[in-house]
Image (cartoon, rainbow, N blue to C red; front, side):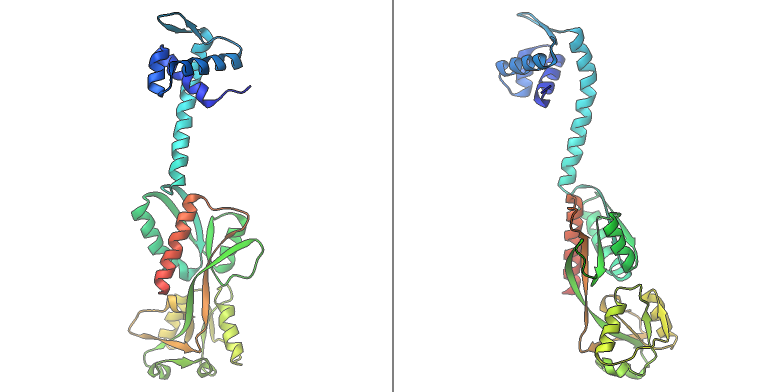
Length: 296
């Protein structure tokens, strides 16, 4: 059976107006076109839907049954098509993303604020996760995309770098290194260090920087969050190396550039075999723009 949506819509308008000419006017078609669509539908169904005479049109019993069932179905279809079109414009829908602690704190909030301002019917759910969980969520399809730090190479992931974030030293304002405008990595050889643990995407990059300068790192403390590390530094337990994005803004702690500069890549990641929805593509673009502004 080859019944078209145009034939069904034409039938419904004729059934509502009980007149071929009025149906033609409403649908902006010619009356012969209306008659042809109805005749083709009746031929496909193998039964008559209207009893016609020169003055008026009446529904047959089959036509009445079809009208009663078809009207709500076409209403539902129109609603679905309208919603789908709105999603294609990025105006509504739900987008799920995951990000590591630093991007979640520094980059995601301004992106969410822009979405709330510009696309009030677009809902963005952000999950704050450690690096390994971000990658796992993307690969499992639990989120549309994620933000990760220098993720390991993978054939399954599409990766776009959106920000190069330098590592910095954080120490107390009364620490001897606070008197310097910049600090060499080798100056940290004998300093008690408080570092992020290996669940962080930054830790392997920090270890690699120390190894390049032939420094055997034996941290006095390892933490899962930069905020904890900063509190330990404030308590006088040592210094910490942290991404510039997460550098604290307090009178008690100071931030100094580490030389030579070592940067980490903040990236957007998604599965290669899954295209983003228009709504997710819009949020991806906003995350790119926010990151570029912060990097600038």
